[in-house]
Length: 547
Image (cartoon, rainbow, N blue to C red; front, side, top):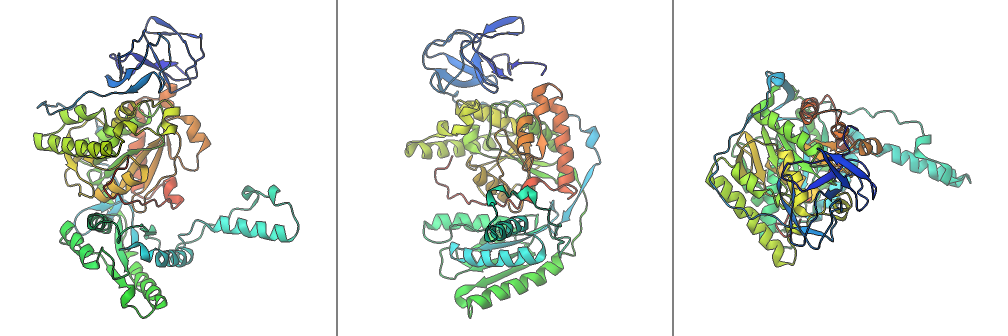
């Protein structure tokens, strides 16, 4: 490791420990010597001067907290001595000047995607099953088991075989505690019947009835957005019949979103069927016929300007805003410079970074829409005794993200530095090349669900603690903030940005590597781990308080 501590911005009054530091240890940085008053594990921060109660704490060059009681130079930042604080924000009419990165390396590059009739290009080719109401979840589960097992999309065969292995051992009186899944010979890769169908996906949910009519409307728009997604080849809908979200409502939202929608769309209503058996069998038969047609689609070259990448962080740590997020941010800038689209969501995790984003807005209406959505959302949280300041999870805090402003200013780095061209409310469709902000919760699955609805065809998901989160129709690429995580959880991590912490690679070098991986993933040349695991997480947001 070339450095043991890092000062991110010249205005900061804290240093970040890049490795474990012990109490009493002396650290030199830029000609200054600091003696640690407390142990400071890697990812945590210590103060570079004596701090008095009420003093501001700066990190990333912005206000991230206030001191609660006197803390000596070399003292570690904790949840006791530092509480969340952020500067107020407003529209200032700043004329933002962006310096785009050099994209000559990627000029005229292409990816092989699925071209849709409306001109959009998908990075995958999925068939989608969705229920208009939770009452149909069981039927979806039955269909999923049948189609996944017989068409080659199941990923549970090794676990079924392992369970059978344990049952046989138990019946024969063997010690099952000594039998590990690694002892088994790997199962042969099951051949898929449809080589150009990347998966059959099921959007089970708990909505569609009960709740409020507004909940049903939001769900309807979300399901319509997924149906219209460029990674989706066709849709099968299961409805009960009497629920709040009627089929005609769903069709209306679909037409509203895309008047020229022309994908295969099969709708089955249970209360109009002769029996459950007839409903399920007919849905399988009709879908199978649709799959035979969708399988005729083939990947063809498309310019990188057709990429639409969502950027997300989850299971974040104190390195997130130093390694993975800035590297993903540089990749985002490359994509924008190439004419593509970037979606940055998680509004509770932009608390403290608002002014920078407002100053980067291309015009006043865009800035004010962002301000309105942020304030409305935060006020809603405060009304129930919460607020954006309560966003960091116990895991975040344990690994150095002491306040929401620290977490948020680091999280915003993954959006890059380009101008904010648009602000999208939940389920609104992206239409402009460049960086758009999407209103979603910070919750990993609610956020990935929302930005996919807005049109992301790949998601770059950074993590310092590790999370298996994925999405049914948007391939999700996991980017580790540190090499220890990448090695420990290699079954879910795709890219390791730990070399940035070690001083072995620059943020720019890692950003280019990330874009190279995106091109391969968009072309189907590499399959992200979350996709391999069928990590199909889907949680609709009811527009209530969720951080």
